[in-house]
Amino acid sequence: MKKILMSAVALTAIMGTVNTVSAADEGIDIKTTGQAVIYYNSASNTGFSHIVDAAGARANYGIQLNLDADLKNNFTFGSQINYLGTLGLEKNVVGSTMQNTNGGTAENSIADDIYLSKLYIAKQIANTTIKLGRQELPKSLSPFAFSEGWNVFKNTFDAALVVNSDIPDTLVVGAYVGKGNGNGFGHNMSSFTDLSVVTGAGTTSVAGTAYMLTIQNKSIPMTAITASYYDLAKVDGGTPDLVPGSDIGATAIWLDAKIADKSLPMGLKVGLQGGQIAPESTLGAAKMANTTAFGLKVGAAPMKNLNLCLAYTSVDGDDNKVNVAMKNTTGVKTPLYTQMIANQNAIALDANTVMLKAAYKVDDFGTFIVQGTSTTAGQSNLNGKKDNTDAEFIFKTKVGGVNLLAAYLNVKTQDANTLHIARVVARYNF
Image (cartoon, rainbow, N blue to C red):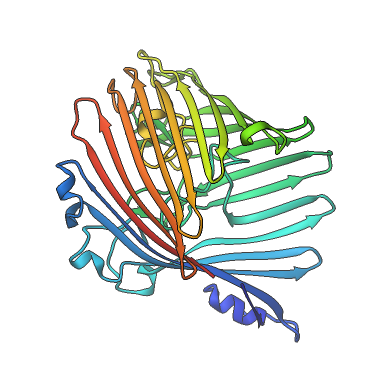
C-alpha cells in the first residue's frame, strides 16, 4: 500500500469530474492500492484436444486502482477505477473476453478501456456507519445481492448501506440497492442496470429497488447466525418479458448458521443454511412458484495441511409454475454451499447436490484442490431434467508476489457432450 498527498482538485481530475473545487492548503491523504490481472479461460465441448482452440477461449488483461481517503470529521471516501483490456490477445489467441467495457473488445478510445466500479462517501456516527454510492456488497451479509470474485474484477452496486453494532455481539445491516453492473462471461462492466432474477422461463429484471435487512449474531458460543430479508419491487421485463407492463413484488429470506471453534476435534466446522424466494402468486397469466432451499456442510482438518469438506444442498421446483432460481441478482452464482466454479445452473433450481472437496497445502509450493459435485435434476432444473457432475482440479501458488491459479474442470450433463474448461489466472496485489 502506498500513500500520496493529493489536493481535492487533483482527486476530482483523476475521477473524471470537471467541476471547480476549492481545496484546503494541506490537501488530503490518498491511500492507493490495487491489482494487475491476466486472466485466461478456454472451454470445449468437442473433446479435450480442442480446449485451447481460440474460438472457445477468452482472456483479459486488467489493472485496478483504489483511491481511498480520510475526509476528516468521520467522513471517508472510496473509489475504484479499472482498465480492462486484452493486450491484443483476441487477434490470434482467444476469441473474446471474460469482461469488457462498452460491450466489445475494441479499444478505440479511453471509454473502451476505463470504467468506474466504486465511488462512495461513508460517515461514522458512534457505532453506525452510513455508506452511500457505488460499492461492493459481501456474500456473508448480502446473499442475494453480492459482489462475485470469480471473474477478472468483482461486480459492484449503486447502493445505500447502513451498518450498526450497538447491540452486543450483533451486526445489523440495512441496504437499499438500486442497480449493479452484473457479471458473467463477456459482460459489459461499465453498464449499471437493473438487478436481475433468473427463472426457469428466462431472466427478468427488477425495475424497482431491492431493500435488505441482515442481522448477524455471535452470542451463542462457537456459533455465528446470519439472517437476511429482501423486498424486491417491480419484478418484470428481461428476456423473455413474461408479461409486458406487469409488475410484481417478491420477497426472499435466507438463514445461515456456522459452528466453529479451535476446541473442536480435528478443526471441525459445521454449517446450516436455508431460505425461500417468494414472488407474488401470478404475473399476468403466469403462475409463480415459491422456491425453497436448504443446505448442510461439514468441514474438518484431519491432518496437517489437509482440509476436507462435505456438503449437501436441495432446491425444490414446481413443474406447473414459473420457478425462480436460487441465484444472486447478478444472474450468475448462488449462495449455496455446493457452489463451485462451473456448476451454478445445475444446482440453482429443482436439484439435489452432493459436494466433496479436499485441499492439501504443500509448504512453500502451493495448494492442491480437488472438488466435485453430483446433481440429481428435476424437470424444472435450469438444464432440464438432466443429471450433472462437475469435477474440478485446482492449483494455487504464489511466485514473486504474484498469486497464480491453474484449473481444469470437467463438466458432464446427462445426454450432452462433456465440457472441458481450462483456466489460468495471474493476480498481483499492490
